[in-house]
Length: 316
Image 1 (cartoon, helix red, strand yellow):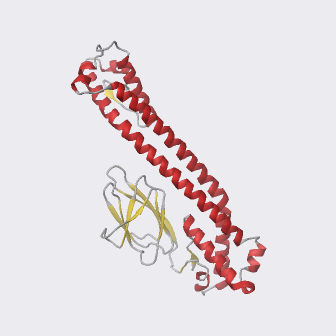
Image 2 (tube, rainbow, N blue to C red):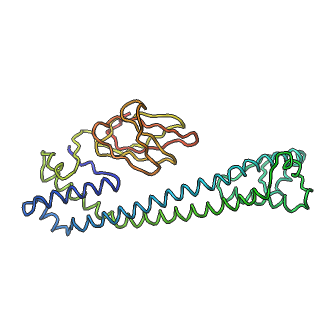
């Protein structure tokens, strides 16, 4: 049974809206959509104005998202070296307190069991751990801290490292603020745009019923009709670090979404030859003609990739 493959993603949705309105306008008084639009109180010209507004909102959202990522990178540039040095300092103290490793608790270090050191996973908690650790060292009169010999031997300036923590915190706060504004814009965009997506879907289903077996009819309005027996569905695939996966049965006009934390590289066909199409985190790529088989590679050496794609049946 024929069914519509509705586009996924603002750019593709706006393109479809423009195509529908252009066809409707060109047909004039002969447009088969007149009765349907009037009955459902749909104004395609207004919808296009809203689409432009939504696109501008989304551009601001993307900018804020990128700013958040940049601030996070700046945070980590300041934070990660300090934490790496701190862990070496903690191990030095542990060797001093080897008969009583729980003495490290007084240095704001979490010690479990007989002496296992456990560091927090999240920035705020790990930052607080480091700040408390440095405060303990700085509480000793100059030159008397048990840590001083290690710091001197390794040319470590804890005052500078403590200042780097403050800088990292500033960038972290800026990252969170930008991310929050981006999320707010996402919600505003969705509230404004989702009713018009519903209108586009309604128009498409009306055209599909109107034209019946003539599936080229809806295509004249920009809709994609799939005649496959198997109904396409979204399939989530995970790609290990520095690995790749080949996906078959991709639906023309469907999308590939990067649900991971880093860029994913998309190639046409079963190999990774040529220049990739880079899909950033959260971005969607609309499948063009000739891309029913693609290969996705994960260039990250730290995170697995997560890809969601509209595919036919159980295509491997």
